[in-house]
Length: 397
Figure 1 (cartoon, rainbow, N blue to C red):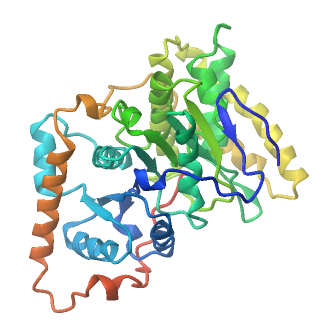
Figure 2: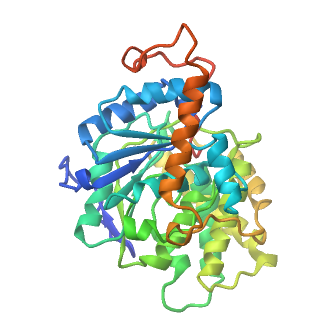
């Protein structure tokens, strides 16, 4: 337990006190995929939100046409105002394409759609649905700084599970990358690199913001969402308008390093988003030397992690950590074309148009399956056991 302040306001969970927060004036955006249908983690999140009673819950949903109807029925069974925003329907897809917004689809694109719908409220909270340790305090803690003069707040937590250190993409890729950038930058007034370095878990998916700030955010389409959001928050809120809050114990499923959705692939998107944010902050990056500087910074951090793990009696595999660093170093290079989605205040489509298209798509999908004799009502389907062949989407690491 400590109470050290970073360059951004840092709020610590020093007691069990639950701070007062404007939950009734907030929309909570919870992106999901069809893998979350009926899972214990998603059920826990939605049940907790019943007690939070926000103004609304927006669920940007990535699901097939066959499963979106049952998923929406399940969501309707919770005692909280849920707007299911199907992100893959044909009308919505055509609408976005007609407005020049087609392109890559991923978590960031889904969240962007949800943020547009959340703009009707005063505050917005965003978090994932795969959290095994979710509590209602997450929402109030994230919102508290916004009621006290800040425009943006970010959650942080320690990733220690099963007797080991996790948070690998943050520990072994993002943090040493930022350190390498800081070491190569001429000393000046604190800027974007110092801002990124101030956040204790920059890749956390949990954040809150005023709707004015949300309307200004350009959003990464995929896995660069979290760090890309930090880059935008720096531009519009800065050090003085930003805070981070301790969310306590946090567990979710983990990704493997390799594979089409593994940490190696994620590192490329996170690296691009980080370097684009740094370039947006007028920092010149020496790409020829970046990989070597990253490896050097990572090596120093690994020594620290190993000592910290031993101090706490945790398992630590130095060789495996070094292998990951070697893999991540291959992800470093100049960012490719900027495919960020525009800020909603500048978007060529309105949230109302998105909602109309998504509602029509969902109604059509439900009508398509309405003849099925096995259809269950939302209330009877609410506690449906999880599909054993559809695990919850893995988290960051």
